[in-house]
Length: 253
Image 1 (cartoon, rainbow, N blue to C red):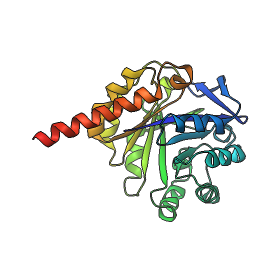
Image 2 (image 1 turned 60 degrees about the horizontal axis):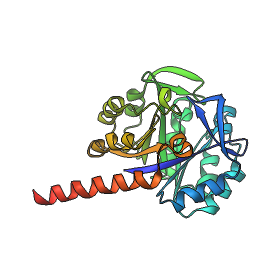
Image 3 (image 1 turned 90 degrees about the vertical axis):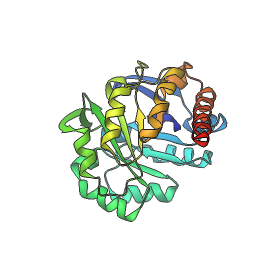
Image 4 (image 1 turned 180 degrees about the horizontal axis):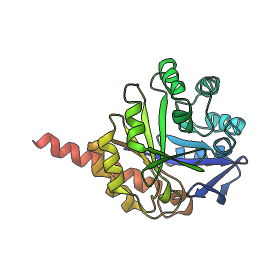
């Protein structure tokens, strides 16, 4: 299970929102590239970057900042936020983004997801942001009548690299992860799932570890890292220890 430190970009700064509300933001750094290097230095294997301005304006707004992040680290980066066009996907892939996340586009233009998966195999992830089980789009400002499970099934024939599943009500709230909802969602997906929303302390990492066998490939955490309630090195050590123990147990059988 990969732990993804989140770097959310707004007005060129590294911020975190509460429940996706742009009016409830906290600035955690004026140099996102420096923040990215910090997480890499602490052992991060991937970074999760979101162009919040892009998500709200429906087109990329932080290209230069994203480029500076990519230049500053050697670990892979997954990116989402305001990506609605094939040429934008191509631009980011050529820039060095390893995984492009499509969210609103999956509902507005499902053919874009299909074409992107064909052109950039294993580089496209589906971002599903759920509010009470229903998909939210347009930077979480609009909740649809489409349930998250149905959306996954709609694209089950494609070769997506992952599903990023976010529980909006818990995102940025440090209220604990929704383990039951994550477990139910895992049962509906044949793709690796990356959970997001609610991570507050180390125990939130521990309670997710048993879901690895069900297809949980990672967890995204932001505010907990910036606020200091979760230590990245400790979280990474907990994951390694769990996997090593599982491997030892399996070898004895």
